[in-house]
Length: 475
Ligand code: ZN
Ligand code: MN
Image 1: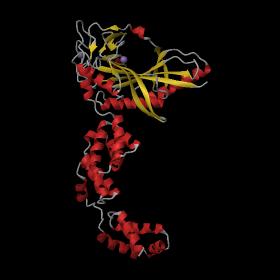
Image 2: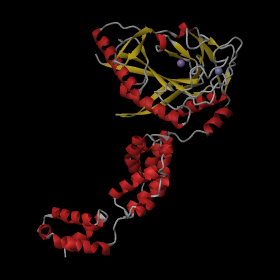
Image 3: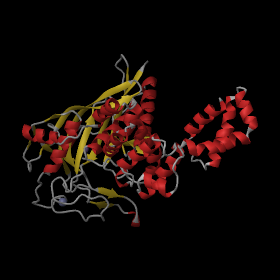
Image 4: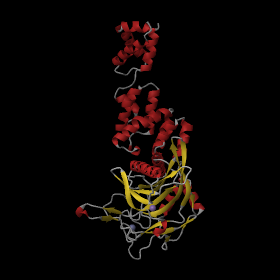
């Protein structure tokens, strides 16, 4: 029997609004517990919700970025449940008519680009947070998160491996950050993911029951949990064992376990939220929001390949964030050597940002500074080796590269008349190497170059030294 895993991903993404979904409470992460609450988000009697306009706009922007249809009329619904961390005991969500539908995300796979369909993007409110353990081993509740605007982005089960799940999540994170609607931090819980997994028989009717996995706080956990479930389902299918539709949780020790039987939509007793009017979105609003849409990562990537003749790999690295791409374009435009700029950005620059934990926006290196450095190398004013030191100084101090070269006396000797006496001396000091070279052992040139570089404290232009030496020895 040939088997095929089918995985769908449900992603909850917190929107970067200043206030909550249905009240004016602030949304900042990390405030002391229960300091960002009010009668509305704690459901006091008589409190009524008012939708956050900005959250609606951000969800529409997301829908457009994911190539969705935007519904002219969508409906908020109550999802009834026992929520210790949501005092209303229902969540205001969207059910029958979500705000956005029928989109897709393009991911890179080993066999080329693949379209993962997005079934829906709807708007809802977040719950508070249960804090278990601690003093007296009691459970406590922090309602600061309660009522934060959340987008739920649901894919079709088009993913067929853990690698594809990771590619999808990374791409979704990139897009959400790119358009500025979500910070995408999985460790802070501002982007959370729940995969649904089952395995089917190819060309047959056998299949395992759909399982949903909870409690995944990193890309790595998603990858491991999906892999684990694929294996578990495949084994059960091949052995002819029956499986149950359930919700499982991922454990740090590297396996999943049953959490509860999977609830069906009707268990939630969804009904239209009587406290809110249907959400009307006219075409003018969609057009206005679409006009703010930046050129997306896929489009920028294609353009970098066209316009700057970057390789597909380089273009992917340069579009790892909107800021990175903008920096690259600003530097490449000024440097006349885009490939060299791309090399610096993914090499020493990325390394230093990483090592020092500096976000690109706070780096002291400017696009113009990097362009100047690339030009100094191209002009032969400094060697590639010196440039590495110069770049480190630029990163530390933000000074212009020419100034650093000047201050540290690092300029390269590219003046023939200055090099000639040193070359003469090297030839006179190394008769054996000269003999060897002339008898055909081209490698012997290395010893001569070595001495010249030593004499000039590494400042001689190596290409010029080579050229002059070969010329001289050929005479
Ligand atoms: Zn509130
Ligand atoms: Mn949800």
